[in-house]
Image 1 (cartoon, rainbow, N blue to C red):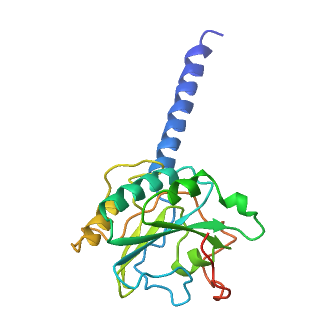
Image 2 (image 1 turned 135 degrees about the vertical axis):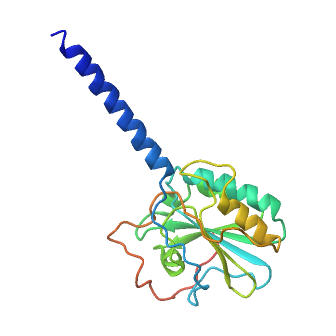
Length: 209
């Protein structure tokens, strides 16, 4: 049996290594984003400020990695006071109770000055804007022209210096950003069975929550 011991140890170490690689890939791999600089949707129900810049972020209320996006948004808003109006839209699947949406993430985002938190019933707004990753951000100017699309974290569940966060702050200051499209890191808003195509037509106006 002794000759088997080194083999068992080698296999055990290999399994640990593969697990670490998988964890690293999970944290550093972007979710699929549609980071195109698309115009403001004509059917959008989220309000545009009409002056200054408008930021829209889409959130899955049960995505743990979105906590990093929340911290980064707070960092951004602290440096863009009076320059950016932000709307954070929480996915509210059809049939889910409101309590499913009102998590501690909701409370955390609501505490950020300059941020309005809203429910996105059925993910209608996410589909209109072409967002499919929790933490995905779009920034628009006063004429509703797209300025930025992507994530504002350097990795999944991680905060700190990153191109997306820098881009939003620079654009809010009226400067050029080295990148206007970045990868978004987070949980999927929709399953493959819920594609982004054919968003529902605008119907009842969404109220503030």
